Image (cartoon, rainbow, N blue to C red; front, side, top):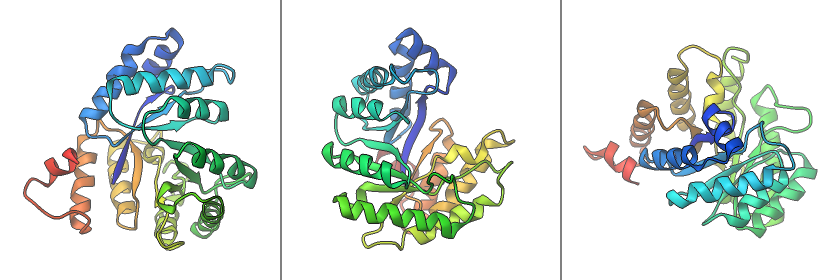
Length: 264
């Protein structure tokens, strides 16, 4: 289970202010903190406060600042194409591009970019019509992403498909559809594409957010979830991921399985 730390995101007040004031300290703090908490990736999201024109420079600064204090690779998260490419140009190691939809116009841009920069790519199971309601529609869009990965020469293990979880308080019926979509996505190719989620989306503006996040993560891991953008401050979530991997026979059991998971 690959854990992508969500905290360097302009949606958070301290990160938004750090970006606007060009203050590296909060970025450095959360890069170090999430590394210590055993994240595998750092999500770097410029957020909505940055203008389209400024996003490339901001993404470049965020990546360089985070990687100046952390050895972790980054998941570059922006709707602005130029910002993604600016981050890729200065990134150390293999990055993840977050993300392309299943619209052909966007896939024809983002798949070649992933190849050019030797990056992994998150593909969203949505198109111009929005997020599908049912599992079969999500899987059909996932197949479009798989076909394009093959056509462009992106290794299947570098494609992460996100079936898109929506908040339980407004789209409760979507949760079970996402679980079923993940199960089917893992059967679309051999080797299978990887799967991912923006986990905290399922609990947005809900009560007991961490409980919902942990429970949904384990449910999805049982059908093939490979990674998620998560709150690395939730220690019980990290422990649940470690325990689930043991119980799903993904990791060999030892009495120190929690410590082993964090060290890996």
